[in-house]
Length: 362
Image (tube, rainbow, N blue to C red; front, side, top):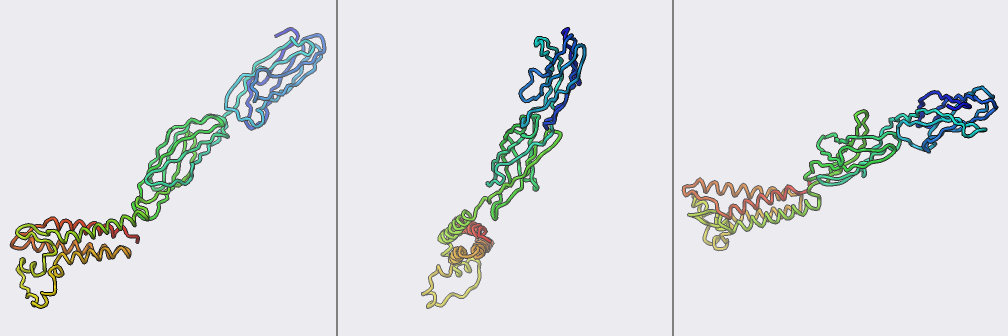
Protein backbone atom coordinates (compact mmCIF):
# COMPACT_ATOMS: atom_id res chain seq x y z
CA UNK A 1 0.00 0.00 0.00
CA UNK A 2 1.15 3.49 -0.77
CA UNK A 3 0.23 6.65 1.14
CA UNK A 4 -1.73 8.22 -1.72
CA UNK A 5 -3.80 5.24 -2.86
CA UNK A 6 -5.53 2.05 -1.73
CA UNK A 7 -7.63 -0.47 -3.66
CA UNK A 8 -10.01 -3.29 -2.78
CA UNK A 9 -11.43 -5.85 -5.27
CA UNK A 10 -14.53 -7.98 -4.76
CA UNK A 11 -15.06 -10.83 -5.28
CA UNK A 12 -11.67 -12.47 -4.93
CA UNK A 13 -12.70 -15.18 -7.38
CA UNK A 14 -14.78 -14.68 -10.50
CA UNK A 15 -16.17 -17.29 -12.87
CA UNK A 16 -16.05 -16.30 -16.54
CA UNK A 17 -18.43 -18.10 -18.85
CA UNK A 18 -17.03 -19.57 -22.06
CA UNK A 19 -20.19 -18.35 -23.79
CA UNK A 20 -18.74 -14.82 -23.81
CA UNK A 21 -21.05 -13.39 -21.16
CA UNK A 22 -18.92 -10.99 -19.05
CA UNK A 23 -18.44 -11.24 -15.32
CA UNK A 24 -17.87 -8.10 -13.21
CA UNK A 25 -15.39 -7.13 -10.55
CA UNK A 26 -16.22 -4.37 -8.10
CA UNK A 27 -13.09 -2.31 -7.62
CA UNK A 28 -13.14 0.23 -4.76
CA UNK A 29 -10.47 2.92 -5.00
CA UNK A 30 -9.44 5.11 -2.10
CA UNK A 31 -7.87 8.51 -2.83
CA UNK A 32 -5.75 9.16 0.24
CA UNK A 33 -4.07 12.23 -1.24
CA UNK A 34 -4.98 15.86 -0.67
CA UNK A 35 -5.74 16.60 -4.32
CA UNK A 36 -8.42 15.68 -6.78
CA UNK A 37 -7.10 12.84 -8.83
CA UNK A 38 -8.19 10.39 -11.54
CA UNK A 39 -7.32 6.73 -11.30
CA UNK A 40 -7.10 4.19 -14.12
CA UNK A 41 -8.42 0.78 -13.10
CA UNK A 42 -7.12 -2.05 -15.26
CA UNK A 43 -5.70 -5.59 -15.35
CA UNK A 44 -2.10 -6.46 -16.09
CA UNK A 45 -0.40 -9.62 -17.27
CA UNK A 46 -3.57 -11.36 -18.39
CA UNK A 47 -3.51 -13.72 -21.43
CA UNK A 48 -4.61 -12.26 -24.76
CA UNK A 49 -7.90 -14.19 -24.77
CA UNK A 50 -9.05 -12.59 -21.51
CA UNK A 51 -10.71 -9.22 -22.01
CA UNK A 52 -10.68 -6.83 -19.05
CA UNK A 53 -12.00 -3.44 -20.09
CA UNK A 54 -10.09 -0.61 -18.35
CA UNK A 55 -12.08 2.14 -16.69
CA UNK A 56 -11.36 5.33 -14.84
CA UNK A 57 -12.67 6.93 -11.68
CA UNK A 58 -12.15 10.58 -10.55
CA UNK A 59 -12.08 11.17 -6.79
CA UNK A 60 -11.98 14.06 -4.44
CA UNK A 61 -9.30 14.15 -1.77
CA UNK A 62 -9.80 11.67 1.06
CA UNK A 63 -12.68 9.94 -0.74
CA UNK A 64 -13.37 6.64 -2.38
CA UNK A 65 -15.41 5.30 -5.27
CA UNK A 66 -16.35 1.94 -6.78
CA UNK A 67 -16.25 0.99 -10.44
CA UNK A 68 -17.19 -2.21 -12.22
CA UNK A 69 -14.57 -3.94 -14.29
CA UNK A 70 -16.02 -6.28 -16.97
CA UNK A 71 -14.11 -9.55 -17.45
CA UNK A 72 -14.86 -11.80 -20.45
CA UNK A 73 -13.38 -14.20 -22.95
CA UNK A 74 -12.57 -12.78 -26.37
CA UNK A 75 -15.20 -13.50 -29.01
CA UNK A 76 -14.55 -16.62 -31.04
CA UNK A 77 -11.93 -18.00 -28.68
CA UNK A 78 -12.20 -21.45 -27.15
CA UNK A 79 -10.35 -21.53 -23.86
CA UNK A 80 -9.57 -24.70 -21.97
CA UNK A 81 -11.10 -25.03 -18.54
CA UNK A 82 -8.60 -23.59 -16.07
CA UNK A 83 -7.95 -21.24 -13.15
CA UNK A 84 -5.55 -18.34 -13.31
CA UNK A 85 -4.63 -15.30 -11.24
CA UNK A 86 -4.95 -11.82 -12.63
CA UNK A 87 -3.58 -8.61 -11.12
CA UNK A 88 -6.09 -5.75 -10.88
CA UNK A 89 -4.50 -2.37 -10.29
CA UNK A 90 -5.39 1.28 -9.83
CA UNK A 91 -2.91 3.87 -11.12
CA UNK A 92 -2.87 7.60 -10.41
CA UNK A 93 -3.08 9.94 -13.39
CA UNK A 94 -1.29 12.74 -11.64
CA UNK A 95 1.44 10.54 -10.27
CA UNK A 96 1.83 7.42 -12.51
CA UNK A 97 4.24 5.88 -10.05
CA UNK A 98 1.46 5.56 -7.51
CA UNK A 99 0.01 2.10 -8.16
CA UNK A 100 -1.89 -0.22 -5.88
CA UNK A 101 -3.11 -3.71 -6.86
CA UNK A 102 -4.80 -6.91 -5.71
CA UNK A 103 -4.84 -10.40 -7.16
CA UNK A 104 -8.08 -12.12 -8.12
CA UNK A 105 -8.68 -15.62 -9.33
CA UNK A 106 -10.40 -16.05 -12.70
CA UNK A 107 -11.99 -19.45 -13.26
CA UNK A 108 -12.97 -20.86 -16.66
CA UNK A 109 -15.42 -23.69 -15.90
CA UNK A 110 -15.51 -26.91 -17.89
CA UNK A 111 -18.15 -27.02 -20.54
CA UNK A 112 -19.37 -30.59 -20.94
CA UNK A 113 -20.07 -30.81 -24.64
CA UNK A 114 -20.13 -34.37 -26.03
CA UNK A 115 -17.47 -35.21 -28.55
CA UNK A 116 -18.58 -35.98 -32.09
CA UNK A 117 -17.64 -39.29 -33.67
CA UNK A 118 -17.40 -39.91 -37.40
CA UNK A 119 -16.46 -43.12 -39.19
CA UNK A 120 -14.54 -42.67 -42.42
CA UNK A 121 -15.83 -44.07 -44.66
CA UNK A 122 -19.32 -44.65 -43.33
CA UNK A 123 -19.76 -47.61 -45.67
CA UNK A 124 -16.79 -49.93 -46.13
CA UNK A 125 -16.61 -52.99 -48.35
CA UNK A 126 -14.49 -56.04 -47.77
CA UNK A 127 -14.33 -59.76 -47.33
CA UNK A 128 -13.59 -61.14 -43.90
CA UNK A 129 -12.16 -57.85 -42.63
CA UNK A 130 -11.96 -54.14 -43.36
CA UNK A 131 -10.32 -50.99 -41.99
CA UNK A 132 -11.84 -47.62 -41.16
CA UNK A 133 -10.80 -44.40 -39.45
CA UNK A 134 -12.60 -42.93 -36.45
CA UNK A 135 -12.51 -39.15 -36.16
CA UNK A 136 -13.13 -37.80 -32.64
CA UNK A 137 -14.01 -34.09 -32.66
CA UNK A 138 -13.83 -32.13 -29.41
CA UNK A 139 -14.08 -28.78 -31.18
CA UNK A 140 -16.85 -27.46 -28.92
CA UNK A 141 -15.45 -28.77 -25.65
CA UNK A 142 -13.08 -26.76 -23.49
CA UNK A 143 -11.62 -29.62 -21.53
CA UNK A 144 -9.42 -32.50 -22.76
CA UNK A 145 -11.07 -35.89 -23.11
CA UNK A 146 -9.74 -39.37 -22.47
CA UNK A 147 -12.06 -41.78 -24.24
CA UNK A 148 -12.16 -45.57 -24.25
CA UNK A 149 -13.33 -46.96 -27.58
CA UNK A 150 -15.59 -49.92 -28.20
CA UNK A 151 -17.85 -51.37 -30.86
CA UNK A 152 -20.84 -53.60 -31.35
CA UNK A 153 -23.22 -54.87 -34.01
CA UNK A 154 -26.81 -56.09 -33.72
CA UNK A 155 -25.86 -59.69 -34.51
CA UNK A 156 -22.83 -59.73 -32.18
CA UNK A 157 -20.65 -61.39 -34.81
CA UNK A 158 -18.25 -58.56 -35.67
CA UNK A 159 -14.96 -58.21 -33.80
CA UNK A 160 -13.54 -54.70 -33.35
CA UNK A 161 -9.89 -53.72 -32.92
CA UNK A 162 -8.95 -50.11 -32.16
CA UNK A 163 -5.56 -48.48 -32.53
CA UNK A 164 -5.22 -46.92 -30.04
CA UNK A 165 -8.01 -48.29 -27.83
CA UNK A 166 -7.81 -45.16 -25.65
CA UNK A 167 -7.67 -41.75 -27.32
CA UNK A 168 -6.56 -38.45 -25.84
CA UNK A 169 -8.41 -35.49 -27.37
CA UNK A 170 -7.26 -31.96 -26.49
CA UNK A 171 -9.73 -29.21 -25.69
CA UNK A 172 -11.08 -27.86 -28.95
CA UNK A 173 -9.09 -30.44 -30.88
CA UNK A 174 -9.40 -33.68 -32.77
CA UNK A 175 -7.94 -37.15 -32.65
CA UNK A 176 -8.02 -40.20 -34.88
CA UNK A 177 -8.03 -43.93 -34.25
CA UNK A 178 -7.80 -46.86 -36.61
CA UNK A 179 -10.71 -49.30 -36.56
CA UNK A 180 -10.32 -52.86 -37.87
CA UNK A 181 -13.45 -55.00 -38.14
CA UNK A 182 -13.68 -58.74 -38.73
CA UNK A 183 -16.75 -60.85 -39.36
CA UNK A 184 -17.71 -64.27 -40.69
CA UNK A 185 -17.65 -64.03 -44.45
CA UNK A 186 -20.62 -65.51 -46.33
CA UNK A 187 -19.48 -68.43 -48.42
CA UNK A 188 -21.88 -67.74 -51.27
CA UNK A 189 -24.91 -65.74 -52.23
CA UNK A 190 -25.63 -62.07 -51.88
CA UNK A 191 -23.58 -59.51 -50.01
CA UNK A 192 -24.14 -59.16 -46.28
CA UNK A 193 -24.48 -55.67 -44.77
CA UNK A 194 -23.53 -55.50 -41.10
CA UNK A 195 -24.44 -52.41 -39.08
CA UNK A 196 -21.54 -51.14 -36.99
CA UNK A 197 -21.89 -49.08 -33.80
CA UNK A 198 -18.70 -47.46 -32.50
CA UNK A 199 -18.87 -45.75 -29.13
CA UNK A 200 -16.53 -43.75 -26.93
CA UNK A 201 -16.84 -43.21 -23.18
CA UNK A 202 -14.98 -41.21 -20.56
CA UNK A 203 -16.79 -42.92 -17.69
CA UNK A 204 -19.36 -40.15 -17.36
CA UNK A 205 -20.92 -39.92 -20.78
CA UNK A 206 -20.91 -42.01 -23.91
CA UNK A 207 -21.23 -41.01 -27.54
CA UNK A 208 -21.58 -43.23 -30.57
CA UNK A 209 -21.71 -43.27 -34.34
CA UNK A 210 -22.86 -45.79 -36.93
CA UNK A 211 -21.41 -47.28 -40.08
CA UNK A 212 -21.93 -50.21 -42.42
CA UNK A 213 -19.63 -53.12 -43.22
CA UNK A 214 -20.61 -54.67 -46.56
CA UNK A 215 -19.12 -58.15 -46.81
CA UNK A 216 -18.73 -59.81 -50.16
CA UNK A 217 -19.19 -63.57 -50.32
CA UNK A 218 -16.09 -65.72 -50.30
CA UNK A 219 -17.07 -66.97 -53.73
CA UNK A 220 -18.27 -64.18 -55.98
CA UNK A 221 -20.59 -64.79 -58.91
CA UNK A 222 -17.74 -64.89 -61.40
CA UNK A 223 -15.56 -67.08 -59.24
CA UNK A 224 -18.43 -69.41 -58.42
CA UNK A 225 -19.27 -69.84 -62.10
CA UNK A 226 -15.64 -70.53 -62.95
CA UNK A 227 -15.22 -72.94 -60.06
CA UNK A 228 -18.45 -74.72 -60.96
CA UNK A 229 -17.28 -75.27 -64.53
CA UNK A 230 -13.84 -76.42 -63.41
CA UNK A 231 -15.15 -78.92 -60.85
CA UNK A 232 -17.80 -80.28 -63.21
CA UNK A 233 -15.28 -80.75 -66.03
CA UNK A 234 -12.71 -82.37 -63.74
CA UNK A 235 -15.34 -84.59 -62.16
CA UNK A 236 -16.79 -85.76 -65.48
CA UNK A 237 -13.29 -86.39 -66.87
CA UNK A 238 -12.32 -88.41 -63.79
CA UNK A 239 -15.51 -90.47 -64.04
CA UNK A 240 -14.88 -91.28 -67.71
CA UNK A 241 -11.18 -91.96 -67.10
CA UNK A 242 -11.99 -94.23 -64.20
CA UNK A 243 -14.27 -96.30 -66.42
CA UNK A 244 -11.18 -97.44 -68.38
CA UNK A 245 -9.17 -98.23 -65.23
CA UNK A 246 -9.44 -101.39 -63.12
CA UNK A 247 -12.50 -101.40 -60.91
CA UNK A 248 -11.63 -104.63 -59.08
CA UNK A 249 -8.58 -106.46 -57.81
CA UNK A 250 -7.65 -110.13 -58.13
CA UNK A 251 -8.98 -112.52 -59.05
CA UNK A 252 -10.69 -110.12 -61.49
CA UNK A 253 -8.54 -107.06 -62.19
CA UNK A 254 -10.96 -105.76 -64.76
CA UNK A 255 -11.63 -102.16 -65.95
CA UNK A 256 -15.16 -100.81 -65.82
CA UNK A 257 -15.60 -100.94 -69.59
CA UNK A 258 -14.84 -104.68 -69.51
CA UNK A 259 -17.35 -105.45 -66.79
CA UNK A 260 -20.19 -106.35 -69.14
CA UNK A 261 -23.63 -107.17 -67.88
CA UNK A 262 -23.03 -110.83 -68.69
CA UNK A 263 -19.62 -110.95 -66.95
CA UNK A 264 -21.14 -109.41 -63.86
CA UNK A 265 -24.04 -111.88 -63.91
CA UNK A 266 -21.61 -114.78 -64.24
CA UNK A 267 -19.54 -113.72 -61.23
CA UNK A 268 -22.53 -113.23 -58.95
CA UNK A 269 -24.17 -116.45 -60.20
CA UNK A 270 -27.18 -114.93 -61.93
CA UNK A 271 -28.62 -116.92 -64.81
CA UNK A 272 -28.95 -114.62 -67.82
CA UNK A 273 -29.60 -115.89 -71.36
CA UNK A 274 -26.82 -114.81 -73.77
CA UNK A 275 -27.39 -112.46 -76.69
CA UNK A 276 -28.07 -113.98 -80.05
CA UNK A 277 -24.90 -114.34 -82.09
CA UNK A 278 -26.07 -111.92 -84.79
CA UNK A 279 -26.82 -109.23 -82.23
CA UNK A 280 -23.64 -109.86 -80.21
CA UNK A 281 -21.61 -109.48 -83.37
CA UNK A 282 -22.68 -105.89 -83.89
CA UNK A 283 -22.70 -104.70 -80.24
CA UNK A 284 -19.24 -104.03 -78.71
CA UNK A 285 -18.80 -105.18 -75.12
CA UNK A 286 -18.14 -101.62 -74.01
CA UNK A 287 -21.71 -100.61 -74.85
CA UNK A 288 -23.16 -103.14 -72.39
CA UNK A 289 -20.60 -102.56 -69.65
CA UNK A 290 -20.78 -100.94 -66.24
CA UNK A 291 -18.13 -98.50 -67.42
CA UNK A 292 -20.40 -97.28 -70.19
CA UNK A 293 -23.09 -96.47 -67.62
CA UNK A 294 -20.61 -94.22 -65.82
CA UNK A 295 -19.45 -92.63 -69.09
CA UNK A 296 -23.05 -91.78 -70.01
CA UNK A 297 -23.61 -90.31 -66.57
CA UNK A 298 -20.39 -88.25 -66.94
CA UNK A 299 -21.73 -86.79 -70.20
CA UNK A 300 -25.02 -85.96 -68.50
CA UNK A 301 -23.10 -84.26 -65.70
CA UNK A 302 -21.39 -82.07 -68.30
CA UNK A 303 -24.73 -81.23 -69.89
CA UNK A 304 -25.85 -79.96 -66.49
CA UNK A 305 -23.60 -76.93 -67.05
CA UNK A 306 -26.25 -75.54 -69.38
CA UNK A 307 -28.82 -75.41 -66.59
CA UNK A 308 -28.91 -74.75 -62.90
CA UNK A 309 -26.84 -77.75 -61.92
CA UNK A 310 -29.66 -80.16 -61.19
CA UNK A 311 -28.68 -82.55 -63.98
CA UNK A 312 -25.05 -82.46 -62.84
CA UNK A 313 -26.02 -83.32 -59.29
CA UNK A 314 -28.41 -86.04 -60.40
CA UNK A 315 -25.97 -87.69 -62.83
CA UNK A 316 -23.00 -87.63 -60.46
CA UNK A 317 -25.13 -88.87 -57.59
CA UNK A 318 -26.43 -91.77 -59.71
CA UNK A 319 -22.86 -92.62 -60.78
CA UNK A 320 -21.73 -92.80 -57.18
CA UNK A 321 -24.74 -94.88 -56.16
CA UNK A 322 -24.34 -97.22 -59.17
CA UNK A 323 -20.65 -97.77 -58.42
CA UNK A 324 -21.33 -98.42 -54.75
CA UNK A 325 -24.07 -100.93 -55.55
CA UNK A 326 -21.93 -102.62 -58.20
CA UNK A 327 -18.99 -103.08 -55.82
CA UNK A 328 -21.19 -104.06 -52.92
CA UNK A 329 -22.78 -106.91 -54.87
CA UNK A 330 -19.37 -108.11 -56.08
CA UNK A 331 -17.89 -107.86 -52.63
CA UNK A 332 -20.66 -109.93 -51.12
CA UNK A 333 -20.19 -112.60 -53.75
CA UNK A 334 -18.32 -115.87 -53.21
CA UNK A 335 -15.04 -114.53 -54.66
CA UNK A 336 -14.76 -111.47 -52.38
CA UNK A 337 -13.69 -108.97 -55.03
CA UNK A 338 -12.28 -105.67 -53.65
CA UNK A 339 -12.27 -102.22 -55.36
CA UNK A 340 -9.25 -101.00 -57.33
CA UNK A 341 -7.95 -97.63 -58.55
CA UNK A 342 -10.55 -97.15 -61.27
CA UNK A 343 -13.38 -97.40 -58.77
CA UNK A 344 -11.76 -94.79 -56.56
CA UNK A 345 -11.23 -92.53 -59.59
CA UNK A 346 -14.91 -92.78 -60.54
CA UNK A 347 -15.99 -92.08 -56.95
CA UNK A 348 -13.71 -89.06 -56.68
CA UNK A 349 -14.95 -87.72 -60.00
CA UNK A 350 -18.61 -88.16 -59.04
CA UNK A 351 -18.09 -86.33 -55.75
CA UNK A 352 -16.18 -83.51 -57.51
CA UNK A 353 -18.88 -83.08 -60.15
CA UNK A 354 -21.60 -83.12 -57.49
CA UNK A 355 -19.85 -80.25 -55.66
CA UNK A 356 -19.65 -78.39 -58.96
CA UNK A 357 -23.41 -78.82 -59.34
CA UNK A 358 -23.96 -77.39 -55.87
CA UNK A 359 -22.16 -74.21 -56.91
CA UNK A 360 -24.72 -73.47 -59.60
CA UNK A 361 -26.73 -70.26 -59.14
CA UNK A 362 -30.15 -70.98 -57.71
